Amino acid sequence: MKVLVSVKRVVDHNVTVRVKADGSGVETANVKMSINPFDEIAVEAAVRLKEAGIASEVIAVSCGPSQSQETLRTALAIGADRGVLVECETELQPLAVAKLLKAIVEKEQPQLIIAGKQAIDDDCGQTGQILAALCDMPQATFASKIEYQNDLLTVTREVDGGSETLELVPPAIVTTDLRLNEPRYVTLPSIVKAKKKPIDVIAANSLDVDIATNLEVLKVSEPPARKPGVKVSDVNALIQKLKSEVNVI
Ligand code: AMP
Image (cartoon, rainbow, N blue to C red; front, side):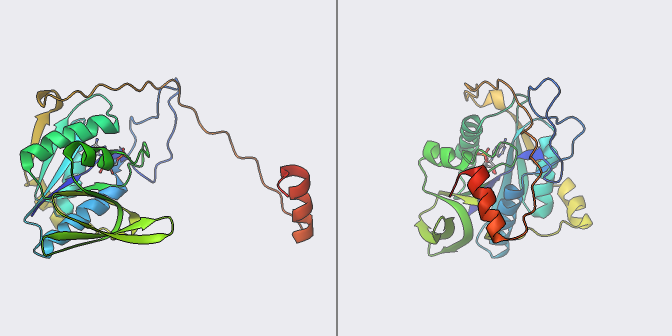
């Protein structure tokens, strides 16, 4: 079974994000960029399927600028077999990414596509679902467990009331939640080995896909600073404070 994993290059989760002085977006120049954490989990899940003899090949795909090759190298160091960069210098919205991924899915014909449940930069949580609709494939989002037996994928997914289990007939799309796995520590030898793995670069405009956005960012600003809290002496004082200030009781 061929597995395709989508990986996005995002601002590293340890970086304090700063808004650009002109309010047009967030600062990404000279900022540490990394693989989206949910995508790292997705690559780990795919590599474990390969190690279990279920997946035959793991392909990592990223859509973005040429620097996204670094993100693909991380996926290759975790254990993906090869990478595909859909190169595009303009900012992409989830619909555009899903259209580009669909073009790669048509080319590669994977039986399983694993994406993150959300990218931590835009927090959209849309791409996997849109891709499932565009490809007319079954989907299981927020997966905390993936199993494959008798040509069926069994996915446990996190829902508000706990968890539910879905069975999917491949080809199918799964998006990862935090509890799915803990990605392995990438060792130096695997980083060196990853340098020799192939990455195909495909220009986004060669895929005959409309990636224009109809979203316009008017202004990006910092959230207002939080007011300092106060300490109350006991529960009665707390209730009095809530009554007088918050008007909730
Ligand atoms: P989003 O809908 O933007 O929150 O992203 C959800 C998931 O879609 C991510 O975790 C990635 O797996 C995938 N994705 C989003 N943008 C890209 C991109 N530019 N390149 C590759 N995969 C992406």
